[in-house]
Image (cartoon, rainbow, N blue to C red; front, side):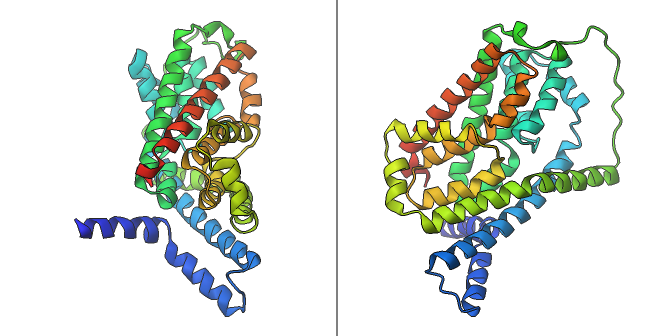
Length: 338
């Protein structure tokens, strides 16, 4: 049992967390005559380490996930979703979102395509919520920082929000609140789904990895920069007083603050890591991450072109309430999860 515990710790901290890299960077900075206890050197170590770690993990994960995704092109995804009804359809849509490494803005074209193809509105919303909030990459990256229990709990509760949100929207019968551009077309054509070769799948995975990395790298730099600033320049007492209380105010504030921002899970993780290290509660930090990835202002502006204000408000309200409740739950379970 002790061996398995040690093996799990090694995998989390040395393989996923790359603590060996952090130590190596620290030694290099000391060799350059820098004092790691100073805010400047500490910020530099945090910035270099997190940027390299997230970039390496991101490329490996996106390549792997994209290879899996090559087995589920949009046409096949539509065909799969079309076989299910009710809660099972929402569950499959939410799970399908976990293998699409997209930010909230990138998920909207697929949401429009699914809705235009005639899939139930609630089902497409389960996908729309799940895709940016929960994916296989987030499971691994969150594990590297917060541990496997937190990562699995985050993914499961994210899926619960996606399934419950989509189910509720279907129960509200809001099909009349979508714009004409996404209404199902009456003319149907049979689509022939061609099976790619292994070489084509690898090429697809490489292109997805390259394109995704190019799109998100700037947000990784911004997120790591903010994280380095929080980690080494903002007093711990300030973070604790603002986000370290078990009251609901911190969770509510973190949820609202995240909405106007735009980043994906890879850009928010270093910020969350720094906030947690400074004494912010786990649920408050994760509520911030969920809010940024799911309800970013640019994605809401794009979504407004496809759905009417009442449906948009319903979507925002469902996600905000779900994220808020998840944040409260994580705060209550923090001692068990960490």
